[in-house]
Image (cartoon, rainbow, N blue to C red; front, top):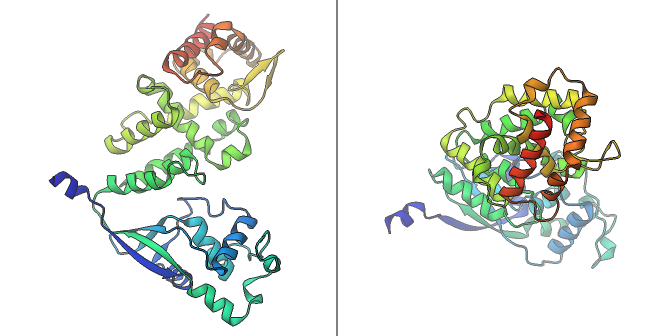
Length: 349
């Protein structure tokens, strides 16, 4: 069928040596984008064991690159492997500390060694070690590039769902501007204060940016939620990327709302309450309930005191109807709407 031919992915398999990858990176012919994946999610031990595997000539999975309109290759999968070896050979090339091997458990004599500690023969051997690269040839179809990155990374342990959204959105025309806008909102002081109960490890995986996206999905696209949060947010973002954000992403409302939340609740609006005190980490289900329940009425609550509003929030959260709509099995449309309705009822009352 012609439709299949139009969407066919043209690829080319090339064996690059690690020395060639380093040279191509230094000359700008291969781009390792930090926004695709945080440069080093791997620990020093994981990077060291990769170097050990390369030295032992163990087979490595292929890396994937995509060719842009100028012929420049962008690394979209295999960043950890590529950057670990580059760091070991020339740490200044990626502005990282020198890698000193640690945690090697097959050849333990490697531990404590730097690249310069090896003989010329071993250093040259490492540089000349090939790795298979699958090059996705340039295509004018942005949707193909977008789906390619998603499918290469979805299901892996390296990237969170929001990191994949960050990376894949940048494959599309205008996608970088869209996602930079989400990041800008995530850095708004009122939002930072309101969501300070996000665990630091989750924040490193862009949980705060996911909450920005989730806020807009809650207030404008709850009807499309079918029980899978990841798919819901993916579809919501894709609708904005491919159809345009329109007036869905209203920065002024976002900032004003989270300034209100920060002022009235400090960082305690989106967590559990017990005996008059907020406890625990930020809970996404509570975030949905507060955002969905208050977005239409928060302007009428601005003159109320923080103590009064916090007491109302505690009553809403302790309401048996709210509790019945949280916990196991809470990720369904009926319970999401129930949480929002209970919370809104308490604040309107």
